[in-house]
Amino acid sequence: ERRDLSRRHQIAAMSAPDEKVDAMVIKCEKTGKLFYNEADAKLHSEETGLQAFAQVSLEEKVWVCKETGKVCFNEQQMAMHKRFVPEAQTFDESNVGELRTKALAAAAAAAAAPPFPPE
Image 1 (cartoon, one colour):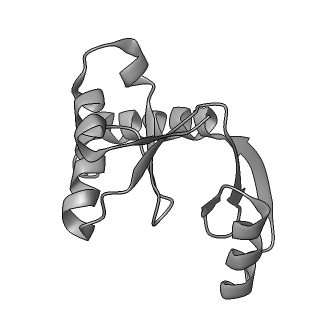
Image 2 (cartoon, rainbow, N blue to C red; image 1 turned 180 degrees about the vertical axis):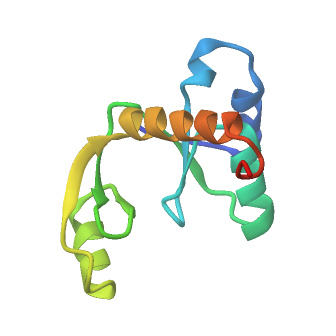
């Protein structure tokens, strides 16, 4: 279930210190980009001027293009992606919660990695 959030409500919700907010995922309604933390969502809004966001359920089904990594939320988006990106042919079904888990694991691994390759 998705619920539209006003800009003020979105920022207030992302700033609230509780577990629900920690698991909250915000989607930019214009670009479809998902955000797993307050800083990234704010940065996206500042850089693009976009302010239409919605909270996305962790159980919401998505399809991820194997060739490009593009996340699609329905068959229409998949068809459009295939039309504009000819190499986009294969999609894996997933859900927002799985994407969030993978993104957080990748961020943790990147943070734990040394800043420069060892000599």
